Length: 415
Image 1: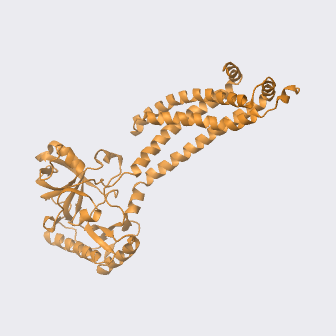
Image 2: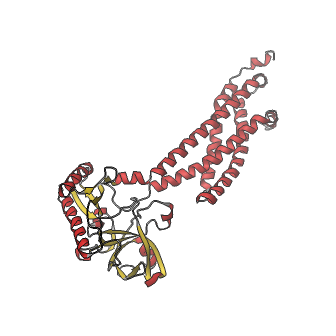
């Protein structure tokens, strides 16, 4: 089959061809970038935290009327309140582990600073998030210790967040160890937190995501440090690991037990006691919503484009009924008529996808300049082109098949 008759026919329908070409180009440009954004959001949703997320609960609460000063008596009273809560939670039958823990991955509550190899932040540094907790923190979170030891009771300090005291020992996540000590000899080495007093690395955990999911935290998303400190304040948070399948029961019993010990506390229903699955859902709510929105937009655009191809091809088939009948009378087979319309659509779609690729690149460059978007990989471009060509062939098949069924006798009818 030669393309000359196809080109001649397309020249007679310039307006319709131009509209379909433009529609295909715009759809490819938007869908290509939208799918790339969806892919990035899904990748964020599936980022591992490094902890064992199952059967994990976070309790956040504040005492009413608790002392707020930095004097020794106030600090001791606050720490006594916290230790009483920990003992109370630890006594619950379905609780396996409890730890003082001011923050968890994805929770959004973050303390961060630089860790350096020398005082005053001189030389090599690694920006890191700090996790304050006691000797039960690592085991409660289910972190994998790959080197060194865990904290023990003798390592634990307690003070307010305003204290200038520095923990003599710390546990770091592997990305921090690798950045500061590329030779892999971080264990036992001395580092400086906030450029102050020295701390010794006594343990290394495999992975621990920082508490923030904000874009500013992406450069150090897995740079985390465990500090053996119970933070004393008018509020305190706890991490609880329950027995399998007992999360809801423990959440209910923990509230009752804590209020029974000291009813003068604030523990809101919305965030006072949460399972880690709820924390994850809230942290990535915006990403999940964006992915759903973009997916919906893609489906609508693809549906409209397919409908446009079907409509235009059906219109052309109606206009060419007698011509198709003449070709059939001259010996054209049904498969020849079907191929005619498929090749015609392939030529239109081919022009559209070439223009669409140029628009997709331009849109991606604009997004990179204004919204910190990454450069779209060639894979997405290739997949989008193949998808649009396949969509065109699928959309044209039904009207093309109807055209192939036009009988030769149509050629004998009056125009």
